[in-house]
Structure formats: structure tokens, C-alpha cells
Length: 250
Length: 66
Image 1 (cartoon, rainbow over the protein chains, first blue to last red):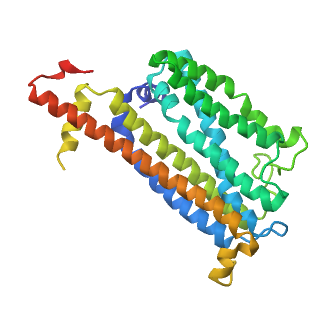
Image 2 (image 1 turned 45 degrees about the vertical axis):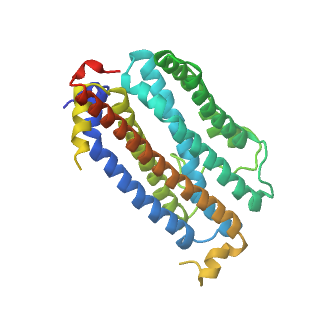
Image 3 (image 1 turned 90 degrees about the vertical axis):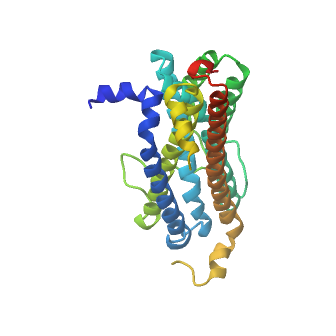
């Protein structure tokens, strides 16, 4: 199968449903393994920070959550482009089914940041560049959720959400560079593409495991949501009726 | 292992409250996410099977798609 064929088939909900069962299982197993190993490693085996002590271990929750919060939004923006330009059916499903997960990850990033800020900065919250732009990200997710429900016609709602998702992507570089543009309490990026991490391998290796686990969780969650949504969308078609008949037999 | 005892592990050098709040929020979110996915899946399956049964009783075929 060429890449072009694969791309075309990915646009077909039926094909996606029939292929994606094993993908979902593989990503789910990887996610559980990586997250369990990464969390245990981070909690008990990584060394404490020389300044922050053990509160530094919150990084293993906070950074993966924050990375997912932004990655999910970028995925929504990409789906928005696919829907607006090519009217791809699967893109609409992605837009409809990814908002909740992204919003919860953003909430987790903000919450874990607050409980890390209290012992480290002496405050739960401060309106600086990084925290405020991440709060804006949460409101963008709320906006997508509300917009979808405000427009009854599914196709029109999809296009409106696609537009908001695409425009909102401007906030992602603002979040990324907020720690460089403005004076802030927030520390700089842990992982950079251009240079080695400033922390020792014993600290960043478990973080890397957790970030990979988070991406696997993202994939497994998205595929699972899409599969259920496809069954609902395609109900009444022959293959879904066949599926329902097959599933009825235990 | 960076801790000498379970007490030391839970205390986290005095930062236990913050560390465990962050980790338990993450764990709760993961469990709730999984439970939500499974519930949605089950609801969809029941609904589709219900449609299939009511369709079969009426003896109709693919004509009554919503």
C-alpha cells in the first residue's frame, strides 16, 4: 500500500474501524507499561533535586500532562485544516472526540503545576506568561466544547470548531516561548531539540518514559473514542448491523 | 530506591502532601478516562443491538436507518 492509498483509506471510517482494533490494543498496552514504569521510577528511584528535594517528582506528572495538553490542541488544529480544506470525514470525528481529553490534560497540567508551585515558589498560582497562556488553552478547549453544542447542525458545528481550533493554534508558540519572552517564575524547557537536558540522565530518563507513555495514552484514547463514534455515525449501514449481530453472541 | 522506609517514601521529605496530590490526581484522571471510554462503548453496543432486535421483529431490513 502506498502512502497515498493509506491516506485515502484513513479518511474512510469503515476502513479505520476494521483496521484499528489491534492498534488500540497495542497503544493501550504500551501506555500502561510505560506509565506504570515511569511513575514508579520517578517516585522512588530518581534522585531528589538538590534544591527542591522530593517535590521535584511532580515533574513526572506535570510535564507529560502539559506536553499532551498542547499536542492534543495541535492535533485539533491539524484536523481543523483537514476538515476545512479537504472535508475529510475522519477529521470531523477527531474534532468531536478529542476536546474532552485535551481539556482534562490541561486541567491536570494546571493542577499539578499549582501543587508544585506551592512548595517551590511559595504560591499556588501567579499570573505570568506560562500559567496565563496555559489557562487560555483551557478556555480554548471550553470554547470548542461550547461551540459544538451551540450549533445544532453537525456539519456547520464542525466547520466552526475547525476554524476556532486552527486560529487557536497561535496560542501554542505563545505557551512554548512564554518562559523566554517574559520574566517568570516558571523554569525553562526540560527537553530541547538542540541541546542535551540540563538534568542528569537519572532524572530525565524516567521523564522520557512518562512522556512516551503519555503519547501512547493519547493514541489509545483517540482510537477508542473514534471507534465508538464511528459505530454511532455509521449505524444503519450493513457492516455496523453485522457488527452488532456478531457482538450479541457472547 | 531513594528511600529508607515506607514512612520516608510517603513523607517525601516533608513534601508528601504536594507530591501525592499531583500523583493521585493523575491516577484518578486515568481511571476515570478508562471507565468513561468503556461505559460509552457499552452504551453504544446496547443501543445498536437494540436497534437490530427491533428491526428484526418488524421483519424490516436496512430501510429503517435513522
